[in-house]
Structure formats: structure tokens, C-alpha cells
Length: 384
Image 1 (cartoon, rainbow, N blue to C red):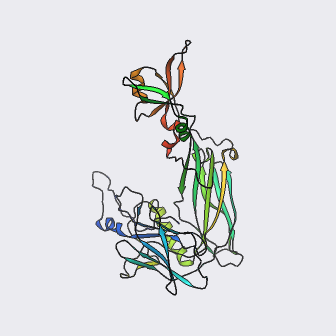
Image 2 (spheres, rainbow, N blue to C red):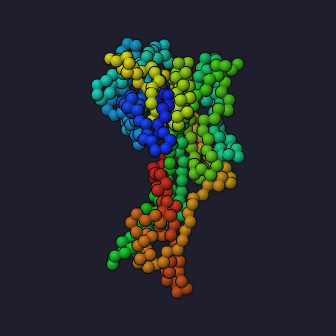
Image 3 (cartoon, one colour):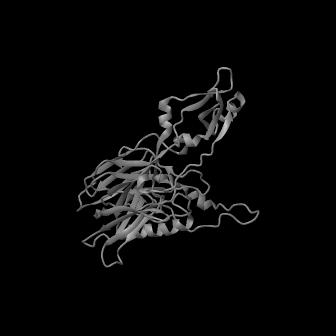
């Protein structure tokens, strides 16, 4: 449940004409608020993210909160401590909580400020009955079906992680290197480096508040709820794609909190846009009741399902890179201009004359022959 829990009344930030931008001091001062995100999983992996809100003019996407102590505290004051990872993540592989007890989340920041959640009961999460995709003229929609035959859940939330493979249009067999007499020479590239440039992987977490209520329905049934959408020609389906969805049960208070935050954030832009004021959650500073952290913690099993889609499953997908090529003369000056250090182009293959001499090189945009330049990584997902 990786969200930026800030909402509020949107102020007019820019006046039309030759006026200066309006940056209220009170809004910019809101950057100190603690954000707490996550779900306490009573019988599995628990991930809690801590960060800080942003000023309206901040350029960063998120400010992680490091070096905190994060614990799950039982009614008899037994504490289990989560391990700090990177990026404000605090995690524990498995908890074993008693469904008849209530628990609190306790946080002590590196500055020594302590926050505590309300006492939380364990909420049951019904299983994901079906996780599937369907193609439409606009792209591919990904859906979940779920139900609670006991009619006890009524409030649901989902988030997801996407991973996909991307490839270059061809193997990068050549590279420009400094020549022995100055200038640039085109030489054969090491095959291991070529392999690293050809296949990459990308990943992305959901950035929406995705909630649904069956409270007004005749049965506690979720049918064809769309959790993700891949528009036509996206590179996500250029080779192979995977999505892992997580389903949580919410209580009414958490659902109301998220509903209001969803309305406000959709009006303002996205979770990661800086926003001017807070919504009161269930986590408070134990020494200052006016200092309320942004976020709403619940305790519920985290249920997951994963699916894969390959390019062969979506014939005619239409993804293609814009890889316009052009010839570069095989002389010192031309090679230096186009294939020197930091150049935007890479030599793809040689053009020879009838005598076998190289007259030109085909210049191809570097990002077309090096998938790492398209925000890719060579680290293959463990489940791939």
C-alpha cells in the first residue's frame, strides 16, 4: 500500500500574467509531516514504509524516513521489531498474531519522537477468486474477482507490482573508442557487454488508491474489478510482462479515510504531487496529540496472485522503438562527431564497397541498442 498520504484544499499557486507564483508559508511548512504506509500482515510478510511530505516546490518524488524503530506491539506489551531495509522500508518476514487480540504499531523516529496507532483488531481477507486479463480496442485490462460468503468484508483495497522485459532492436556488436592516433575508432564490442545491452527488465509499483465497497450490494461480491490497464503499444508487452496483485480487507474507518484521500488526490494530480494539508489517520504522536501522522494502518492478511502475459498473447500489439538510422562516413572527423564519448548514437553495422573496404557505418540511436538507456536493469526478477 505504497501511497503518499496527503490531501487538502488546493490553493491557487500561479496567477495569470506577470505575477509571481503564490507559495504560502504554511503550505511549505507542512513538509515535516510523517507518512506511514502499509498493512500489518498477521501471518506473513509485513512491509511498513515511512517517509515525509513534500513542499510544493520540491523536486524529489519521495523523502524516506531512515533510522526509525518500527514495532508491532501486543496488548500485553510484547514487541516485535521490523528490520530497516532501504528507501524508508521496514519489514519482517512473518508475524504470528492472535486474531482474538488487538495490536498497535509503534514508531520511534531517529529524532526520538514516538508515534502509536490506535489498538487494531485483526480483519480477515477473503481470497482472490480470479485474477485475469482481457484485451480491448484500447489495450489490456487486468481484473480481479473476489467474494466473502459470510458477508463480513464489505471493504476492499488492492495494489500491485509490475515487472516486464524489454529488448534492444539488435545486438550492439560495435562501439566507438578513442583511436591510437586520436579521434574515434569503431571496434568489435565484448560479447558479454553486448548481452547486457540487449535484454533488460523494468518494474513499477501502483500509484493509485484502489478501493471498493460492497456495502450497498446484495452480496459481498467483487466482480470484474479492474486493478490495472496497459494501453496499446506500451513497452510493457513488448516481450513478457508480469503483475503481482495484493488484496486487503479494510474496516469502515480505513475505507472512509482512503475514500476522502482518493477524492482529493484525484482532484490535485497524484499521490506524489505535493499537497497542502493532512487527513487525520489512526497514528499519533504520543507526546503531542496534535501531531498526527498521515496514514491509516490496518491488520489483515495480504493475499497475492500473479499472472504473466507474453507478446504472443497479444498479436498485433504494435510496440516499436523510434530508431531512425543514417550513414556516417568512415573517417576520423565523422566518427568522432557521432560515436565519441557520450554520443547519442551507436555504430550498428558497417557498409562496405565492392573491394570490401568500409565506407560508412550505420548510426542508430544509442537507446535502441542499449536497453539500459530506457530505464532498464540487467537484474532479472527472482520469479522470472
